[in-house]
Length: 223
Image (cartoon, rainbow, N blue to C red; front, side, top):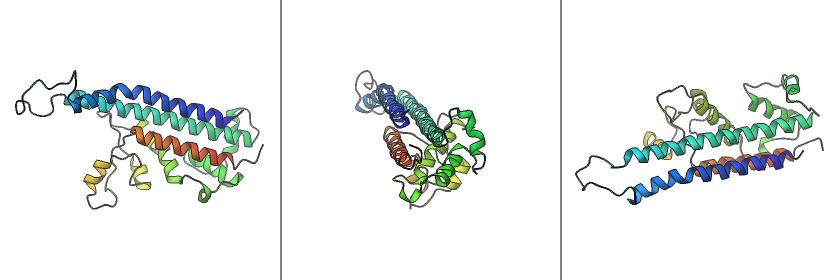
C-alpha cells in the first residue's frame, strides 16, 4: 500500500475542495469592495451610517473562515492517517486497534506527541534534519483542536486555547492585523488571539504536511 500516494490524494482533494467552495464567497467580497452588481450602492454618500453591504461582507468572511477550519481539520486527519499507517507498517501491524499496546510505552498527551516519540526512538527521525520545524507541524494540529473544542457558543471565530498560547504565543494562524494592533511595537501578545485559516495559510499548512511526511517516509526501517 502506497501511503504517500494516498496522502497526496487526500491533500490534493482538500486543495480542490477549498478552491471550489471558497470561490462564491470570495466573489461576494470582491464585488462589494468594487461596488459591482448586485452590490451597487443605493444611498448617496453621507446618507448611510457604515458600509451598505456590511452584513453580506461579514457573512461571506465568516463562511470563508468556517471553510478554512473544515479544510484544516481534513488536513490534520490526512497527517494523522499517514503517521498511523507509517507506524503500522514499521511494526507490521494490520489493524489500527493493535497500535494501543505499541504506543503505550511512549509519553505524550495526544496522538501527535506519541507518534513523534515513536519516530524519534524507533527510526532515524530527527527534527534537526526535518525540512519543517516542529512548531509549524504541531501548530497545525493544535489549531485544529482549538477550532473543534472552542467553548464560545456565541462566536464562529475561535480563539487560540490557553495551552496553545503558552506554548506558541504567536500562532501561525493569528490575524496579522489583530497581532499588529495588540503588539504595535512587536513582541508577543499578552492574551490568546483569534484564529483564521485563510487560503494562503491553508496552502502553507498543506505544503508543510507534504514536506514533513516526505521526510518521515525516508526514515522508515521496514521496506
